[in-house]
Image (cartoon, rainbow, N blue to C red; front, side, top):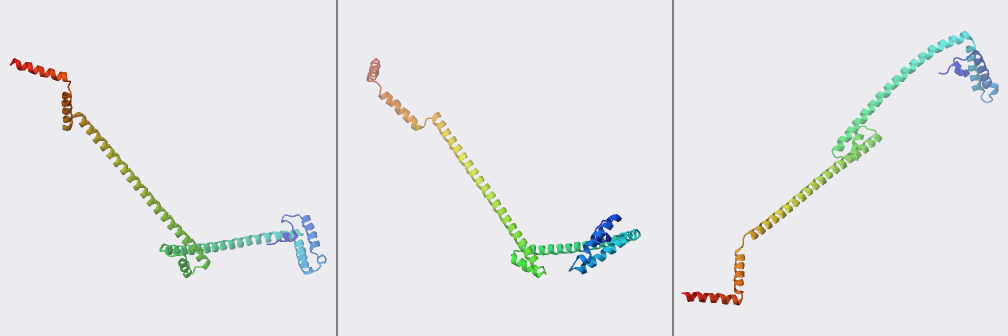
Length: 241
């Protein structure tokens, strides 16, 4: 809202001398004789400058103008504030309604996506619900991408779980096999130790026969002189009887 001070190009607290100098400068700039080819514009501006100076150069008229202007400014500011608040409320209500509509369209798209429908079906469903085409395409693309990412994540989790279970089963199998081999080895070692102990503590019939044969062989292999001595001893015993 332009004021008389704005017309002269001075602040509201300008002195009388400042107002006079500003008027002379503006009048020379916008005098019709100095604006050839734009006389009408210059004449209108020059008249506004004269009217502004006529009021502001008079102390009483300036005081009245300041009072009226202040009241008008307060009223204008109040009206402007009311208009701004009303506009803000309308914009907030419009945003809330738009956000609610957007959320509803997203919810519908997610529901159809969960049922296994692809992006084109989602787009067609949204168009059927009076959704603006550009927004419908955006929602369909976003929901389809989100659904694909969820499926990939679920598949990856299942694969990881299967791999973990397989690794656990393989580890258990290897551990069981290793434990069985150790038990078999320990049983074999114990059996061998038991057999060795029995062999060392008791002679088998075969061993006895082998030992008897060895004693016979040692007797048969006796020196001939020893054998004749025995015969001689037996002969002398027979003579006694």
